[in-house]
Amino acid sequence: MMKQFGLLVLASLVSACSNDSWRTASREPAGIAPSPEIQKDAVIEVYAADAYSWRGWFAVHTWIATKEQDADRYKVYEVVGWRVNRGLPALSEYQTSTPDRYWFGAKPEKLLSIQGEQARTLIPQVAQAVKAYPWKDEYKVFPGPNSNTFPAWIGQQVPELGLKLPFSAIGRGYADNAP
Image (cartoon, rainbow, N blue to C red; front, side):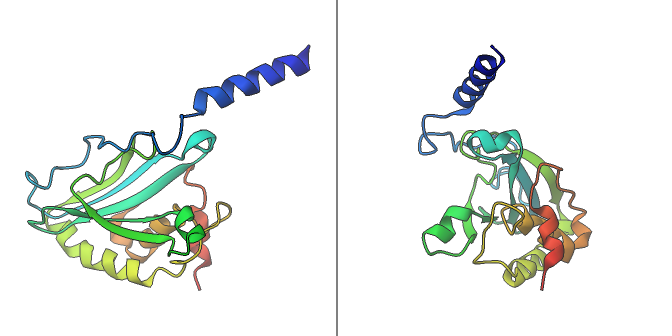
């Protein structure tokens, strides 16, 4: 009886977390980032969203977005494991007007937002730290380096950010292993 109950609970949990496909999961903007058309000041933001599928019960995916003064787009920096599987660097950089997109069905939460003069001062330091990231071509879910190791490492290089990652940012501690 207990075994049947356990199987029923497991089946319920798996079906509750399964999107049809990561390909059809929402990547729409969450509406929590300042619009670059309205916000002319420089901006630095860090986001976290539940990892895809069942992994989201335990872990988040995190990324960093910066917008220079008067820029019409954000520069988004993130580490993604499947890029390595395709022979690409794990570290990705792209430009968008919507840095707050859902992470494959999971709404992001804003972990950090710095605007104005402080952001203008820190953006070059963030960019420098991104260039120096030691695990650009590596990705391991556990213990890291992974998507959470990256912003943790940036936060160590630019302590003025005051970045605090949540407990569910599994891999954040790997940043302490930098060469």
